[in-house]
Length: 144
Image (cartoon, rainbow, N blue to C red; front, side, top):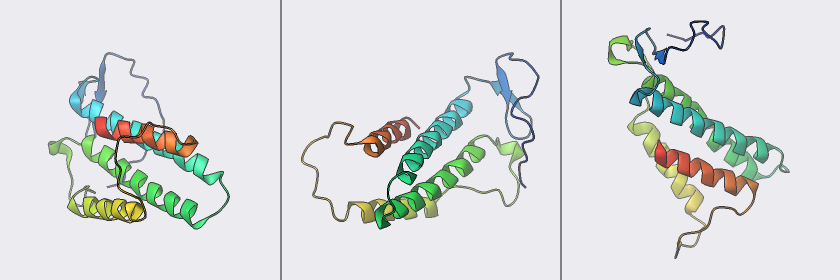
């Protein structure tokens, strides 16, 4: 089942609640709304990283970083959809984020760390625009 969005507003006013997939209404401070909102925020920060990365000269590292982040963004989008769908509105064939995606992500992290010396202390966020936004993504991810 594909979700088609034709408008970005609902014209129903703001009464402090919102609809989940399937139409069930919940308060905007519901943990489910908070969770997929944080996932959406993380996705947006990764979009910023990709935009700055795209402005860099082409290199194998920049191309690989873009591919990794694009894959993560797609999976975050799927996760947000899953979080926005209550059990009674789930459907057969619904995309789920699970063990397979976690395994791929862990392998990607290992690949990225292969050439790094082990950390001996915490590091201050910064190190350039991309690194700073990746630090922001890390903090949003921890909250999620």
